[in-house]
Amino acid sequence: MTETELTDRCKTGDNLARKELYERFAERMLCLCYRYAGDEETAHDLLHDGFLKVYSSISSFTYRGEGSLRAWLSRVFTNVSLEFLRHRDLLRDGMSLDDVSDLPDESEPDASVLSMEILMKFVAELPPGYRTVFNLYTFEDKSHKEIAQLLGINEKSSASQLFRAKTVLARKVKEWLMMNDR
Image 1 (cartoon, rainbow, N blue to C red):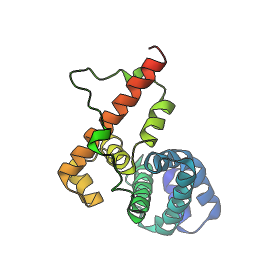
Image 2 (cartoon, rainbow, N blue to C red):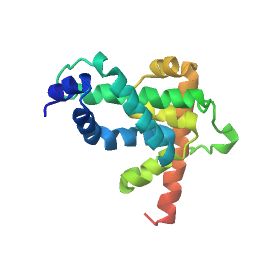
Image 3 (cartoon, rainbow, N blue to C red):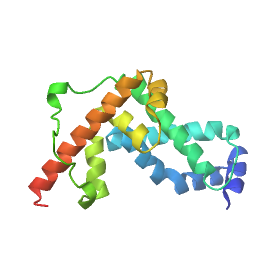
Image 4 (cartoon, rainbow, N blue to C red):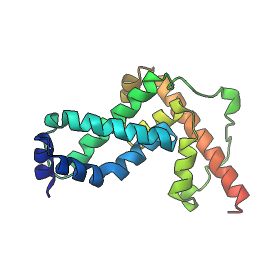
């Protein structure tokens, strides 16, 4: 079934089409939710909430070519995840600057030897505010201005949280490399 057929059938309330939509995109959307939530249980809850939102708002989707459905779904799931974080007031969670050790005059560690699973685990361990800014900047390709608008924070706060997230990640990668003699 093509994406246009799939979305047209979903718009009419066809449960088989909804099931196919879920089966095609659930794994990818679960990964997106996990990047924001930081734990599997919450990610599954967000996945459920996201698909409810998708099914109730699919009539607003307009097909714009190959990949537009996936892009629309990603926006819906990102917004559901951000709303969850806002509602729980988790975007303010961070670390004190004293807890973030800078890596002065050192080159960044080579993270290419780490598996994606380990890297995503490190991202999931970031404080929610850092993790959210990192995800929006790195994976959603948002500017600091866009992030600030989305999260209701100052642009400089976005840049600061991204810097801190990268510093924490670099430290974790460096520690992992040292522990695994790479």
